[in-house]
Length: 219
Image (cartoon, rainbow, N blue to C red; front, side):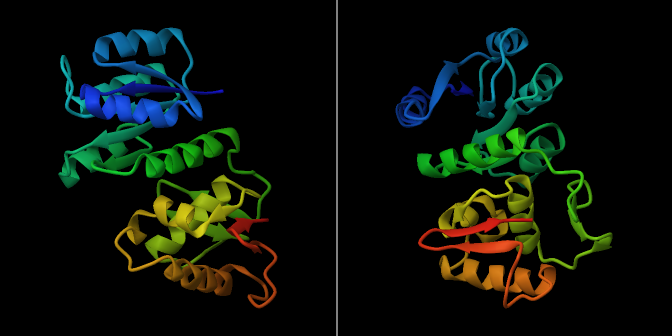
């Protein structure tokens, strides 16, 4: 069963998230960072949900310390919206940054994606190569010219091959799409991606449509 460690000092938020996430995972809630770091050093967790405003230590410092003792995926869950906080977190071990307030369903969607990425790392034999440090994707050695939204969708697909995603799942995973007008634009993005990655975009062999759900990557 998926194991989640939550560092959150707001009891109302913590109870809400625990009630929702406990349907899908084993959730351990801790308020104090030093206690959490000891636990992470002793036990294996898949996901850490980390608030930034905590007693004892600032959450950004906690993020750095967690990465030294654990390989768990870190999702920052914070009302702090300063871009510098987000950049610092992502550059120092965080895997995702979800600004409060948010719907618990969005948090769980991101948890599923990160856990799937952890369980299914990129296939070294794939024709597609993902370089997360440069935010580029290559096909048969040639770097594809992608927008940020297209890159993030391909990153999702490459990290989760053969897993089907709804348009809503894809929209939640793509930061650059969050303020878009609707889910129909996901169809447009998929159409543009197919023109860039498929030998014949009218007969796709990589980005497949899953009838009644959305899309999956079959590469």
